[in-house]
Length: 322
Image (cartoon, rainbow, N blue to C red):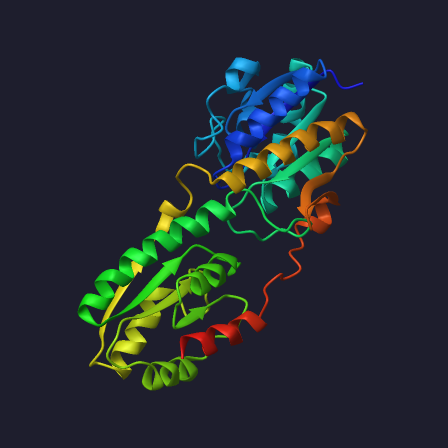
């Protein structure tokens, strides 16, 4: 029987993480289970940074971005010595189960840790990249794409005023989900993604045949093989010196901000079901939501990222932007 759950956030922060922590704490307390917040992810687990959490501890955080538990990446946890120390810290606190909120690295660490020490863990997908299998959407993705859309709409205003060509770089080192969604949502003339081979000549052709006397927006995922927005913009400047070409890198504003209603609802559901999954004896799984139904996916399958990219949508972008 589980008596005390440790909850932590790890990897990049994502809007909705606090809402998920809140749901974990209140669900566990409802079931008479103690909850301990582990500060700074696996690094805090190794260093014994534990904070008891009560119902009031998570009051007034559902609307806050970031994570009250902080987050960090831990090189020490990648070593057997680091994981052994983390286990000893957990046992000293009487923690006998974990809820891990994060992405690929978080679930990879939880998988190895569980195999070595047997502490059951259930994960909630918290990453703005939406790059995990086993869920339609990850926590923070909806908020992030809406943040990008607001920024690009503002950029287009000045682009239209000066007939400029803007290359806007968004997050997505290994996944183009943010770029694809926001490219469609902002009516971009082209979208460059890490999943699709970069074709410079095709981009030239689109720019040459496109609307000549109006603003153009090109969305570039930071992981695109062309080298990012600045690299692509330099090539385009050489080919089309007549274009007034600008670059805008949105950066970490995409991670911050108050979570959307969708992210708050999703986070609450996933946190609630993560605790109930542990109570039911589940372990080594990520809680997700597919077709409006809660599902449980083994960590190993969740982190595979079976390329959810809908390339057909790129063809639609080309047609709608023409």
